[in-house]
Amino acid sequence: MNQEAPIIVGLDIGTTKIAAIAGRKNEYGKLEILGFGKATSFGVQHGMVLNIDQTIKAIRQALENCYASSPNLEINEVYVGIAGHHIKSLQTRGDIVRNDTDAEISQKDIDQLINDQYKTVIPASDQIIDVIPQQYIVDSLQNITYPIGMSGVKVGANFHIITGDKNAIRNINRSVEKSGLKIRDLVLQPLASAAAVMCDMDFEAGVAIVDIGGGTTDLAVFYEGILKHTAVIPYGGENITNDIKNGLGVLKTQAEQMKVQFGYALADEAKSNAYITIPGLRGQSPKEISVKNLAHIIQARMSEILDFVVYHLKQIGMDNKMLNGGIILTGGGSQLKHLIQLTEYTTGASARIGFPNEHLASGMFDDELTKPMYATCVGLILKGYNDYENDRKSLEENYVKINTSYLAKEQAAQTFSQPEEWEEEATPSTQEIQDRKAKERNASLKNFLDKMKTKIIDMFTEEEDAKL
Image: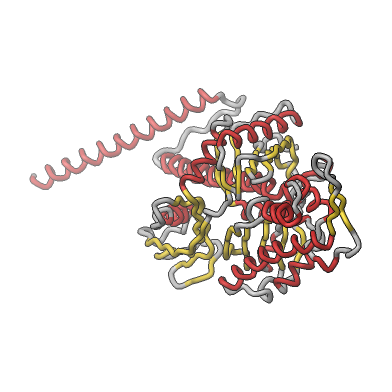
């Protein structure tokens, strides 16, 4: 394991569960999980924190379970996923005019361009969560993915801005901070899930990530390596469970169990003569539930969710022919039987299940974490590593610039005088090197002043001779 790499922790605050996963990249660039804990979520509905006290208890329970799996683990900062009905997105365009047109476009220019977008006018009750560049424009050149190093007067970009309700964001912050943690960053859940289940080819081919969670279904569409669209659909696994509960007259726990064990997303695949026996309450006779009827209830709600997906794809002009990578289903709700067939029938695009094992090292907790329900949490860790690697790259570039500038000054100082050659001896100490450099600088300065003095004397001497 790469001991120099930091430990990143992802915290997924969901409607049905809260999961905390700590990981570190090994020497092969794969994530090795150091700690994993989860707890049942009670204070969250449709992705929004509605009961802070219960959410704090659930977060602490997940952390305790995470510590139990790795007693030496220390967690202070976390990357947190965010979703909910309040999430919105918009497209903007921004430009800057550079003063020094001879210099190359730098990361500083890009940072200024991005930071300017945080001044975008949005409703007073909302807050910008993230600003994601899509394509850059340098002067008349368009569709540029990486403008750093180029030359130009005007630099612009198209941006995808994600916003959320201030109070909803504040409730998440309070819940996490009162649990004794600090939020390093808030990340939109479908973007985190996409990072966990997608590879580079998927980004280029064009895919739609459909993350079916407990309270919401999150959508993220990518095409030619660009994030084209994000959306939060206000239905998820909890809605299916409630439909079963109300439609069949059973308890919620029984409805959830039936959905997981006997549920079909495609009613045609369910057997007509198969029945589920439910124990009666308080001495009542047992109830028999038709598997076919159960499947019809599940299919009705799943079809509604997929109709929303088709609607959003049409809104951005992304029909099934442009999604060469198809639709990737992930999240806990993606494990319903025959959901792939229903998705392909409804959308007309190919579909598959997205497992978060693309970046995971093998043998992690008996492969428990390779289940789609943990895609968001794994993606949060990857987001943290992306930030870490970008920060490290920026520091290295600044270090090179500082050293280059320092060497240039040293070489310029040495042009005034040629230092005496050192005698061959043992390697001098740091103090000796510093003393010698100080002497060389003093000698150079003295030599320069002597030359100036001589020139001034000669000048006055020539003037006196001319008068005579």
